[in-house]
Length: 390
Image 1: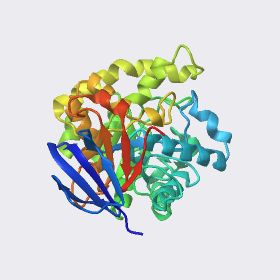
Image 2 (image 1 turned 60 degrees about the vertical axis):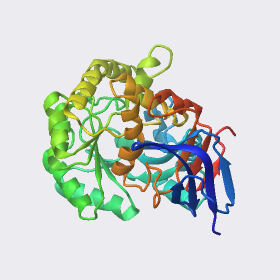
Image 3 (image 1 turned 135 degrees about the vertical axis):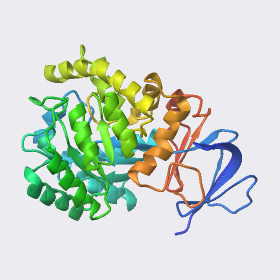
Image 4 (image 1 turned 180 degrees about the vertical axis):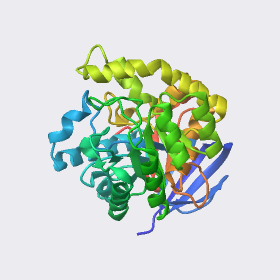
């Protein structure tokens, strides 16, 4: 059934600036952004001067995780249990003003099925773009929910399995990670020829790629292979940042993941190995941000939501962290809307006719205040209103 929504008397704001305008959406798509629009509507939202902004796009989440202290403890949980958790996380993200998420690793088709459930309106939630299972070396980081593969032939097969299942992005582990026992956080895992095969196989189907990569060698291997985005990039040095900028590789910093562990290290049962690795990474991550900003690396917002004390309800806190690490509020806003939408490959991130009607109402200008995202008033996803306060 056709549905028309109008947002009246608001200040429309996106990365291009602010203007006084009404927003009209029909069947989930923005059709007009004009002052004093006269149109019959099924739903009318009176903004009363509030800022009408694009919904946030989180380019790195794990829907099946619960932000508990030890994700590896989920290895024995049933698919049904993890699926119910994913449904809860979707609701929390949407209420926080997040209208698109990119899931970068879940077992048993959970995130792929979540994407379909949201599209079919079975579940309330942001749009989901999912990778299916991460492609990892045998015993590599996140192997308990990844697809283990060794050598180019196995990598090719693993990627094709994810594509067959409907993956909208192919994700791999180029280095070790913080939350896997026995893994060296910065050490390369997948070899250069394996990364090249992964990219080549995904590109054959026009599907982008993402690489979990903490250490400089792993980052550079991934960039040289043609990976589209580097996730985390904790130990990025100046040379790696320059190579990323030259190649047009996106960086998704996921500051919330590191901060969640460090802030709760002394008062929660986070595994000792994870705390130790997070503390080793803390200073390096600050330097990585400096290198990325100096080289003008393209930054897209992502949180790694689901990792310890990194909840879906708190996804907007990532913007304030990005500001703490040196970005302006305006740059963080663009990274979390237009740039993240470009990376994920969705028709969102701006308030523009022809794009999806994913909107939030805010009491202040998000270009000048990252903290305003803690005060989301109303959320519109695919042209339908959700009251974030209920």
